[in-house]
Every structure is written in C-alpha cells, then in structure tokens.
Image 1 (spheres, one colour):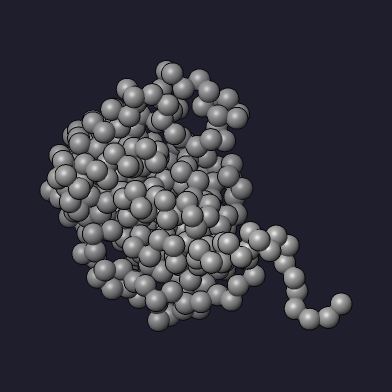
Image 2 (cartoon, one colour):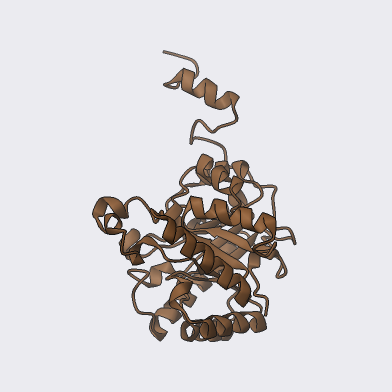
Length: 313
C-alpha cells in the first residue's frame, strides 16, 4: 500500500472536523496567542494551603528563597474554618500580594447521605453533589466567603457552578468573583473544558495526566479561561513530575497556572509540617528554574489580574 494513512472511523472524523472538534492527537504543537488580561502568560499556584499556620510558614519560606507564586489554594473546604481564621488568611494574602481561592463545601466526603461516594466506584465519580440540601449549603458557603472578602472559589460540581454563575450575573455574588473548577470535575478533554467555561468557570484545573495535544485543544475550545495544569501530583495519584515539559506547557496552554507542590505529599490529607512546606517550596523553585532555562522570555501574569484572586479586605 502507498499514499497517505487512512484513519479509522471516517464518518466520525468527518463530522467532528466539520463541527470544529479535535480528531487526532498527532498534531503539531502551536504557540498559544492568548495571555492574561493584564499581560503575561503564566502564573504559579500552590495547592493544599489549608490553614493560617501553613499559609504563614509557606509565605515566609517563599520570600526567604525568593520564589515566585501567584496564588494559593485552600482545598479541604472553607466550611471547616472559622470566620476569624479565613479573615486572617485573606488579610495576610492581601498584605503580601498573593491571591487565594477557597474550596466550597460540603463535599460528598463530609455528607452523611453520600455513602455511595465512599465506595470504590463512587470515588471514581468525582465529587458531584446528590441532594438539594448540599447544593444549598454550597451556595451559602459561597455567599459567606464573598462577604468575608474572598475573590476565588474552588468549585467541585458542574451544577453548583451553573447556579453560582447565575448569582454572579445577577449581582448576588461579586462581579469579580473567580470560579476555579477543581480537578475532581475531571476536565480531561476539550469538550468538557468548553462546557465548564460556558457555565462560568474562569479557571479550569485539568486532569493531571493531560498531554500537550489535549491542552492545545482545550486552549482553543475555552479561550476565555485560564488552564490550571498540575506539574506534579501526590503519590496516591501517580506521583509523576513533569517539570521537563514546563516550557512546552506554557507555550501551548497560555494563559496557564502552573500548579506545583503536590508531590511533596503522599495524600492531600497528610499532615503538613515544616519539612513538607520546605519540600513544596523546593518543588516550585525547581520547576521555575527549568522554565527559565528553556523559556526565559516567558512573562509572568500581571499582579492585578482578576484571576490572581486578590482578597478584598
């Protein structure tokens, strides 16, 4: 046989191509032409900063080491923290120029009616809410965080995202509130990225193992949202580290948040001590060294960009 390769499923390929969907992974990488609204193509996000003590120690070590970070994530659920602690975390971030996003709760792992979630099959389904009481509680959590001055919410459920987007449009939530979709929403392809962006997501955390061709397709399908790409993961999620791809990821996925530091822990619910924080900061430092070695012209995002999630205090 000679000539060009004939792909399987020609009918499917033709329909997908005619409607603007991706069809193959063997594509030539292209440099994204998008950037953040205030300029720059990348920011840095540190996850699992879940209380005031951890936040203080992390900021101190980052500044001591001269390591750049844009925003932090609280990921256990803000409803576990009292108002005073949240206010102090927001105030500290505001003073030091960092953004912070808080996770909405209650998520299924805390819900008495979510026994299904605790099964192995349920765990594979993400953190979707299965009752109206939990939906209402998530909305109340969002309103509380907005009142306290938070400007970044981590959302775990597409239905909750849809409701919060309507509330923001009506002015019930601050117009500059940022909705960051968690990796538990399993955004693993470009169509899912578009669906979440169409429902108001400003910041899309992609599944941890998404390769460059799919990141490129996601960027094209959801041009208004940032892509938040994990560069390393907890050991119980595979433990891989992809720092060697950081320059390519920035070029293909921009504007992008580089999510770094998870590999310092085996599990997101591990206790965080000073050694963990030091290891986490070291991971961020090394990833940015590799970015600067291979793509020194890459510009950081502007500090006043809404996606930084700077608190209002």
